[in-house]
Image (cartoon, rainbow, N blue to C red):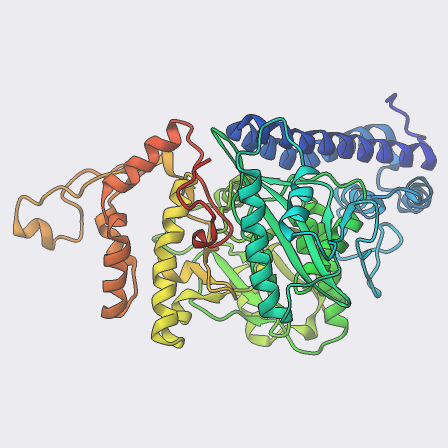
Amino acid sequence: MTINPQLSASKTAEVIHNAFDEYHVQFKAITRRARDRFEKREWRHWQADAVERLDLYEQVLQDTVVELRLALGPKTLDKELWHAIKHEYAVLISRRTDVELAETFYNSVTRRILVTVGVEPELEFVWFGVTTVPTGNSSILRRYSIADDQPLASTIETIRHDYAFDAKYVDRGGDAASVAAVMQEVLRTIWDTPDFDQIEMVKSVFYRNKGAYLVGRIMKRNRLIPLIIPLIHAPEGIYVDTVLLTEDEASTVFSFTRSYFHVEADTPGDLVGFLNSILPLKPAAELYIAIGYNKHGKTERYRALYRHLGNSNDRFEIARGAKGMVMTVFTLPSYDMVFKVIKDHFAPPKTTTRSQVLDRYRLVFKLDRVGRMVDAQEFEYLRFDRERFSQDLLDELLSVAAETVRIEDNKVIIKHLYTERRLYPMDLYIKEMGFKAAEAAVVDYGQAIRDLAAANVFPGDLFIKNFGVTRHGRVVFYDYDELCLLTDCNFRTMPESASYEDELSDQPWFSVSENDIFPEEFRRFLWFPAPLRRVMEETHGGLFTPEFWQELQERNRAGEVLDFFPYDKQKRFRPDLVS
C-alpha cells in the first residue's frame, strides 16, 4: 500500500477488512490440511500445522498494524478518524457469516494501535447485553432417522459411510455393531427405552493430534444427548475407537485442558451453537477457543465477565491455596475463573525473570496440552471499579505488582494478566476430601506427570500446589514458570557421597549444571500423608528413576507421537490398538 498520511476512513476500513479476510482464508486452508494428515498418518505434520495456525493471527495483525501506522502517519492516533473507520468497517462486514470474528480482529487492531485501556465503545465493537448463539439448525448438519424395521447398526453404518476418507475402514460391520450395542444400553439407562426420534451429525470432522471425531446428538422430543464417535487410523486402516454418549464425556473431549480442534466451519456461530446444545455448561468462550478461534473466545470471555460483574456484587479476593512466588492469583467467588498477575520481583530461590515467564506461557500455548495443562488467555489494560476489590487483595497487588497494577480515578487498571478456569488446588483437595477421592487424585497426579513427559513437557516444579483438580476429578498442571521441554533436561542419578560429612552438608558434593535433574529427589516435593505416599510409590515409583525420563526423551527425540485419549481407556473397543 502506498504511504498516504491522508488515508481515508473507508480505505483504512478496507485495509483492515482485507487483512482479516486474508487471515481467515489462511486459517481455513491450514485447517483443511487436517483431513490429509489423518489419512496419511502424518502426525508430526499435524503438530506443525497446529503451531502454524496458532501463529497466524499475530503475524497478520502485526503486518496490518505496521502498514496502517505507515499509511496514516500523524493521523494514526486520531480518535475522530477511528470513529469513522469503525462505521465504514461495520458496513463492510455486516453480511459476513463470521461477523463476530471480524469484529474481534478489528478490536485487536485498534487496541494495538491506540493502546486502549478498558473499553471504548466509540472505537471498538462492544456488546455487553443479552447474547445467544444459533441452535445449530443449519446446513452444517446431516440428519438421520431410523425405521421401525431397521437395525440401529444399519443407521450407524450409514453415518460412517457419509464420512469417507482416502483410507479404508477396517471393520465396518463390527464397528457399527459395537456402537449400536453401547447406544442401546445407554439409551435404556437414561430414557428407559432405546427409541429416539433422530440423530443429527455435524458434517465437518473434528481433528486433533492423531484422532478424528464425528460429533452429533441423539434427539427424543425435547431431550438430547451427545453422540461422539472417535476414529483411530492404525497402520492397517481406520477403526471406530469407542462411542461417547454423556455430557461429562463430551465435556472432557472439548476440555479447556486440551489443544484446539481443526474443524471446518464457514459459520462458526452455528457450530458453537450446536456444541452448546450438547455442552450446556460450557461457556461460548470455551467453545470458540476449542475450535481454534481463541482470540474471539477471549473476547467472549471478557464480555461474559463484564456481564457477570453487572449482575453481582461480590468482590475480587485472593484465591485459595498456597501463594506462589511468581504470580499473585485472585478470583471472584461467584465466577468460575482465576486471574494471575506476574509479580514485580521473585523471591529466592527463584531465578526466573518476567520475560522467561511470558515465554513459558507462550510455549504452553503452542504445546500439545494432552488434557493436563490449563488453557490460559492473556489480557492487557483491563479496567475495573475499585469497589469490586477486597482491601486485602488491593494491598497485595499494589505491594507485589505495582509495575502492573495501578489505581486511577477510582478504577483499578491492570496492565497485564492471565485468566484460567478455576480449579480445586490439589494441596487443599488432598486435605479436604475423603481418602478415596484423595487416593484417586494422587494416582492421577502421577499419570498427569507421565502424560506431560510423553508429550515432551517437564513441569519443572512438581509441588502439588501447582496442580489442580477439575470437576471431573482430573488432575492438571497450571503453574508454568519452571516448565521446559523434556528433551532440554539432563536426568541424572544422584552420585554417592564420599563421606558422612558430605551428606550433612547443605551444599552438593558434586557438580550440578543448570539443566541437571535428579528424579530420586522428587520425593521431597510430595506433601502426602503416609498412606497416600505409599499409593504414589506403588503406582508411579518409576517417576523417581532417571531411566523413566531418559526413555521418554529418546522417544520424543525420535519423533514418536504417543497416543492420548480424551476418554477412559476402558471404553475403547480395542484397548491395545495403537495408531
